[in-house]
Structures are given as C-alpha cells and as structure tokens.
Length: 616
Image (cartoon, rainbow, N blue to C red; front, side, top):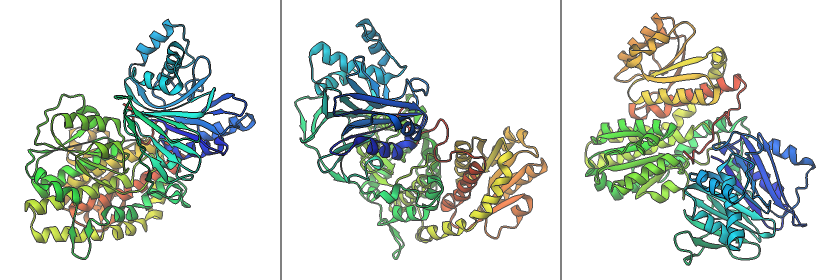
C-alpha cells in the first residue's frame, strides 16, 4: 500500500510532486522519495526514511530542478522501512528510475535470473527487481523504454501501478496498472499521475482511469498512447473524465485531524448517500440496483457478503438486515479467508462486496472467485470508477466523499446506510415487510442526520471522559443483536489509533471466557440502546459490575436502569433498532479519537497502517 505521483509539463516538478505526496501520505508513511530529470540530463533520486516532511527537509540543499519527475510514499511490504528500500529505485546503470505500488509475486525468480546475468541489487524490494528487468530488456533486446516496460510486464505476475522515467529520455513517463489504483491527469501542456485523484486535484480535473493490463506512454507535446498487454496491436483511445471532487473536500477545514473532520461530516455524507434514493416526501426508497435486479435477489439461494476490516463489520449488520427484513439467508465472509478456502458458491448466489476504496486486494480476489463460479456480483464502494465498481454486475456507491483518515468513520455509516436501503427496497419488492413497518423505518431514516447532530452536542462530555481512560492497556466492548458488530467496530477504532488492545464481543459470550479478564482496572464499553434484548444486556452489565469492571454505556435517551449500573454513560436518540448502529457508533468513534489524542498519537497516520489495503 503506497502512493505514487508523477508530473511532466512546463512547471518545476518538485513542488507539485511534494504536494501530491502530502495528499497521498495516508496510503503510506514509512519512507518517501522523488526522482527528477534536470536540464543537464541528470537523473537525481532523493529518498529518506520517514514522512514526506522528512523528504522535503532532506532535499532542501539538493538540486531539485526539472520539469519531469516521479515520487513515492511507502508502506513497507518487501523489505523493512529504510532509505535503501524507499522508492524510487534506480536501475543498475542509474539510467532508469521506477516507482511502484503493489507486489510482484514472482520477483525472487526474476531476481535470481538477473543475478545470473551480472546484476546486483541495492535493496530488498520486489520493485528494484522490476526496474532492473526493464533495463535488462532495453540492453539485451535494444528496446525503447516503452517497449522494454511492455516486455518486462509480460514477465511479471502480481499487482502494480508504476511510473518509470529515463535519464536519456526526459520527455517521457511510462505508466501501467494491474489490480492497483492509478489515475492520469491531463492539464494544459502537462500531465500528472497518481494513486488517486486527491494527488492531482489541485492541478486538473480532467483525468483518465486506465484499465488493468494497459501500458501508457505519456510524452511531452503528444497525445497519450495506450496499448494492452494482451494485444500490443490494440490501441486504446483515452477516455477523459471529470473528477467529481473539490480541493476543499480533501482539506482539513479547520479541524485538528482528518479523522475528526470525517466524523463530523457524517450527517452530510449520509445525506449525499441517500440523495436521489430516499424520497423524503413520499417516504419511499428507490435504489436502481435493486429495482433493476430485484428478481435476481428474489431467486437467490443465499447472499454472501465479503469485506475486510470496518467494511466487514458493516457487512455483519447487513446480515441482520437482509435476514430480518427480506428473509434471505446471509453468510458474511472475511475476504482474505474466503478467497483461499475453496468455498462452495452456487450460480444462484448473490455476492455482495463492500470496500471503501474499491481497491481492497482481498475483496477484489474474492469477487473474481465468486464471479468465475457464476454468482451475481453486487458492489458497495465509495470511489467512482474503482476496481470493485468495474468488476460488478450492479452496485451502489456510498457517496461518502474522500476519506483521508486511516481509521474509517463515515465509510462505515454510509455502508450501513446503503445496506439499510437495499434491505428495505428488496423487502418491499418481496413483500416480506408490512407497509406500516416499511414507512416507519423510512421515516426514521429521514431523521437520522439530525439525530447524529444531537450526539455531536455531547462531544465535550466525551472528550473529558476520554482523559480518564488513557491509563488503560485493555478494553472490552460488548453488544448484542445489531449492535454486536458496532462493539467490534468500536474496539477496532480504539486499537487502530490509540494502540490500546481492545476486543469486541457478543455480550452473552462474555461468560465463555472474557469475564476472566474483568477487574477494577478494565474499562468495559457496553453498547446498550433500549431494544428487545435490553433486559438481557442489563443482566450482562450487572455481571460486569459485580466484578468491579469500569462501565461506559451507550444508552438510549431517557434510560434509567442501565445508567444506575454504569460509571459513565453516553446517551443517543431513540430510533428504529435496525438503524441504531448508525447512531451508536458515533460516540465510540469520538471516544477512540479523544483517547488517542490525549495519548499523543498521530491519529490520521497510525503506525503500521495504511488507508487502502491494495496488496495482500
């Protein structure tokens, strides 16, 4: 998981590349580097361990001139975070520099071959192997850079998006992608490339989204040339699209962190998610994917939901929704396990893939497996034109807007919102829901943004409470029904950004092991809004209290019973049970954020994590 950026034009490349890296730093921040070709024909590569700011400081006294360049911010996969493993990588002659996001799976075989040909390696990375292979192709077969990249990519297996420049050819950048995100920006007499649109939005809104297996030559003063790895003679006409994104969307907007901004954006993101789908006056949901393919869902043997991380938690809520409202059996799978398990998939299964970025490697592989076995593929993702969107038979965008903070917040609530709308729309078609129940839930969905705003009024209360728990080394999160996945999501948020160990459990499972951990030092977060399992979870709270656990409860406004048993509580407005996760997760997001800030953590860039997991 890395970020790549490139520039060719009339301006000095370095400031543009640095800005691009800063926009992409959420994708990786172990190390960073830049390669520039200057007017003298020198190919200068500068790189450092650490963040983009460290690279900027390192380059303060260096020759950073040149109107063509590539740059990279890294999250380590092959080789530890270090200067020598940072990108860009030189070829042996130092005539070529390459940046890469992804994994070359057969790099060891290629490396052994190149060593036998006299090549030496300066790093532990798979990326340097690809760079050396390109040079070998050029020298052995007397090829141009474009032809050599094409031939080298024919030899590799894995995932990649790359940018390649050559000392002797300062008017060209070669780029390509396979199962890894890439966007090419087209400006006035200039071209840019990046791992996503945020890297280039400041300079152009005209973009090309290359497809897997395309090799692209970007040449100064000429039109972009695209060919396919499968068929070199097939020339592709570039399709230029407009980015539906503004610079304001990817700025902090006065907030201390992107994560906090994105937490507070959730009423807006939910409104955008429902816009055009939730007809507020008529109290109706019109979801095109379900309207068009409702019969496919109706005939489905079962629904399989596959996702990773936060999206998996949203998928678990989807199971409750589809089974309760639509009466269709649902299995929820962790994509990284599903893809390797030789699962049983039937042609009449519906496979729902959920991914914020639309580029999650394991989720994409699970989709491809299900598609090969004949299942109908439905995607839920945030990024228009992403790999998930292209691979599906149908789907729904969440329209959450860019999410820069590594710990997902608005991605979760908009994914749950989409699942709610899907289940309601489908249930109405299948006649598995009474009209009065349907309209009651839809009415509550119309009010959900205002109810989140009401929770935000308690932010100072949550902030003060959070300071108490910076001592903790472990947390336990408990929930039942629809709010069991919320407990897991709350625990994930805390461990991601504060580095406090936390586990989410079904509250009734506490007696099957976790209760042994409870003492006066253990904070227990109980997600306990007042629904049909209320008395059951009240009993669980009493069991914790009897063992002197410190209880933080998420309760419905007006609750009296659980409040008596808790040390701290946060009230949320009453809503329909199936919508409660959208509300109950908000105080958990705020709690984790404020604990992490109180502990001095880098909230937007937690250690060892990157935003979009585009490699295994």
